[in-house]
Length: 145
Ligand SMILES: [Cu+2]
Image (cartoon, rainbow, N blue to C red; front, top):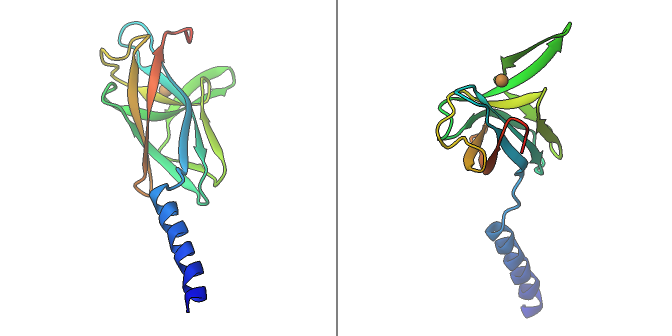
């Protein structure tokens, strides 16, 4: 009987350890906000890693520093650059999603006083399944410094 119970106990301990330290399936890397002079909307950039085994769908973003924070996509068609709102962006398992100048970006529509170079502001990304991931976004000036 003892020979039988020891391996069982070991596997139970292993399962408990796995629960105590869940792998973080979503990671934000290299976040930053680009503050522009005046009340011009600020852009937000980052790289999102989906380390999980399932597709995730980014559906929104929020920050107490921004009023409305939107998901935008910059496009260049026939030499005309424009941006549009996007409702959702899928990120494949093991995939990454890059928000960068000239592509997907966060648009901080009403930048508050916290959006100034040298500060940092929390941004929460929200997903279709209810998951959220929050990171502090350092604020840089228009040149990215
Ligand atoms: Cu925009």
